[in-house]
Structures are given as structure tokens and as C-alpha cells.
Length: 358
Image (cartoon, rainbow, N blue to C red):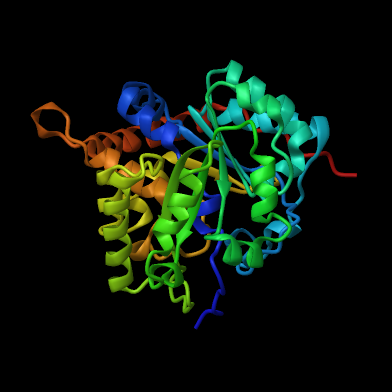
């Protein structure tokens, strides 16, 4: 039996939650399709640092199995200054993404480097998302950058959040987001679902904030075999889906399309069936180690997945084109072709010489 994982994880709150990628898939599906056929995944998620001033109980990013065992995020090498910037764009040049999600650790630990990275990504026309706890002020210069989405992870209402996330308290968040138009992201747990009106109270509080552009809600995603208080029972999941279906009509800032919410009731069965897992490359803070099978790492329980990124892209995949062809089938067949193209390209690329022996 796995160790119980207490409190709300930063599960989906750290994940790339690609509203821009969803719009890309719907509005620019040909571009994404072409990228896949050339052997590239259209999305890239980078853990930009191993550092975080928070010690959230059970954070999956710092779990023993997140990177496959043997090493944890706090133990890998990471970078600062010009070396970080250089290595970051080497990754971007290698993977050629349409969408980049910057996670951590805590990305704002590297705000000086991001002050240079984010404008360059904007100049390249890359959709970018920074997922943060807002533990420190978000640079006001970022507010004017095109194609940048700032996602702030919030673990419920103030008493629960502050108990978990100090020093990234509600008071700090409210101060640090001033002048921005952020996305609030929260993961729904069993404790929240079983408290009448809790989810609506949360959505109402953040809907009333003028610095909030939209609100996203994930469902708690456990690891296989996990026993925890946060894990949703089937009845809890049904109740959460019903609440979101109702609240999305009452609160316009709750940007949860009907098709996305329905996926929570029937998530992808495995990483092989998950468009997010199949179209996103996830890289750890050493800029070398790829995280699999998705940003969660370890062994996520796909049958109980509540990842908003996965749900959003499955909703896109369920969309049917003229003649009834699902978008998802195009991605599936294109990925097979793209994988062949990528292997052929890798065989043609020159191998880096081994370092000379001393």
C-alpha cells in the first residue's frame, strides 16, 4: 500500500492547463497536425527549477516516484542566469513547440531569467503558460506580453489554502496579482465536495476579483493504489461534475465548457488514450530527464484522472469534423506517422562525440 498523501496535492494545479492549446487545437488544428506529422509534439512542459519556498504536503513534483525513482526533483541539477536561458532555448529549438508551459518547483524563483525568456517566446509567437503559487510579486511587465497566460494555483478557500501554502497565503496572492489578469486554478478534493456550497463559495470569491480573468477546476488525480482523504469516491466525482455543470452557467469566469466537464465522468483509460500525454513533452529541471507518462510522473490512476489538460484535449478530440470524423482519430493516426518521422530524423542526426578520457 502506498503512503497516504495528505491534503490537496498540487496535482493538476501545477500541470499545464492549456486553454491556449485547446484554442490552438480548435482554431489552428492544421498547424498542430502539421507539427505532429513532422515528428514533433506541439506542447512542451518544463520544470524550470527544482527550488520552491513552499513545502506543500504530498506535492507530487517532489514525490519519490515523480522522476521514475532513484532521484527526486530536489536532487537533480538545475540552472541559473545565462546558462538557464541558453539551455531553455536549446530545448525549445529542439522540440519546436506551439505551446510552452513553465512549471517548477516555483517558477518565480527564476523571475529574473523569465524576464528575458518570456518576451523572446512572445516574439516567436509561442503560446506560453506560467504556473505559479504567486509567493512573490508577479512582474508587472508580464501583463503586457502577448500569448502569455499566468495561472495561479489556489488550494481552496483561505483557511485551507493558508494552512497548506504558507508563505503563499491569500493575502500575498491578492497583493501579488494586482495589475494582472490571471487564471485561478484549483483541484477539487473529496473534502471540498462533501462540504455543501464549498465549490460555489470558492468560485464566487475569485469571480468577484477584478484581477481574475478566468477560473479552472480540476479533480484530484491519485496515483495507482493510493489511499488518501483527497481521493474522490465515484459518488464524489458525480457530485463534483454536477456542481461544475451548474456553476458554469452562474459564473461566467468559470471557463469549463460542457464537453470538458463531461470528460471528468469518463476520462481517458490510459496514457496511450490521452491526447495530452501523447502530444506533450515534459522535461525536468536538469533539462534532460523526460517525465512520463505525463506531467504527473509516477503511476497516475488514469481511471480516476481529473487533469484539466487531459480533459480539455479529450473534449477537443471528441469534436467531430464534417462526415463525422472525430478530431482525436486524426491525432492518433498522425502521431503514428510522426513517430516514424522522428525516428528517421534521429537516425540521421550526428551523434555528439563522447568526452575524451582523462
